[in-house]
Amino acid sequence: MATTLNINPENRNSGSRPVALACEQYNNEAEMLLPILHQVQKTIGYIPAFAYSQIAKSLNLSRAEVYGVVSFYHDFRQKAPAKTIVKVCRSEACQSMGGRGLKAGVETVFSDNDAVAIEDIYCLGNCALAPAVMIGERVYGRASIDMIVKLAQGKVNV
Ligand code: FES
Image (tube, rainbow, N blue to C red; front, side):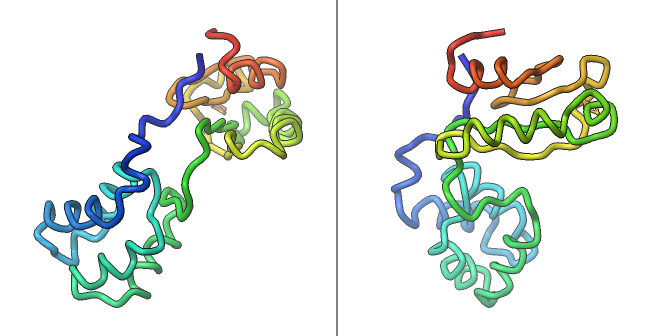
């Protein structure tokens, strides 16, 4: 079965408590904004809109400053993540082995499926087995559209 994000679904609806705990963990220090945001995302799965004001107030920053950091770093999600994230390598070795077509094909297959998100990643250290993908936390080589679909749907465990 494909590995999925390990986020407790109860945390997604737990309101502001995880945000307050993250701020407290770092003593409400403004220079700790990045670790606080990482902690919130680790706990909730993304940075919810209500967190901007709460973090800003706790750290004595403006909401715009918090939002600016969240929107600048692509690792921060501003909406709840899909249950399964497929990262397709876009670096040279994988591109030369059909990575572009692979990504386009997978995007087409899952275009109407909000449970699966397709993202770019740049070299998974699996170049010899290009094209490579990462599903959840596991890397797969010699990836094909059919293989990715089965893995993302939990139908096989390669
Ligand atoms: S280029 Fe794709 S894994 Fe290295």
